[in-house]
Length: 137
Image (cartoon, rainbow, N blue to C red; front, side, top):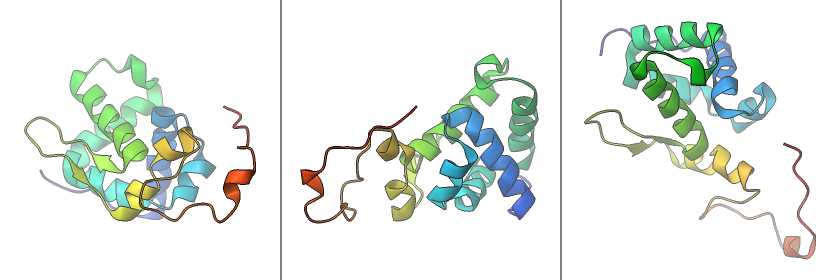
């Protein structure tokens, strides 16, 4: 795979910035999940520094739907998939894998549907008695 992306503060900030474009969630929401550094490490392992760098550079210039390179579009979809489900989808012949129990629980899919990941602690006793909060998206 080659060199890996260093997982320092600046690199994590850049990763969160490009993830905003890929997920539709803002930096605060992505940061609150607490998985950005872990996801950057996974992306680095799976894509390598060169391919990840090309993706990040391209997303600095264009929106995800404007990516001309099919390989970069595939990588962008994989990063979005990772954020939404906590699962690296596998590319080509690779196997998909759940990054961690925490990544599954913090998947953006649960926030999107205003739900709770199965097997995680619920909102508490009597919470069913209150109407759901409106989500402004």
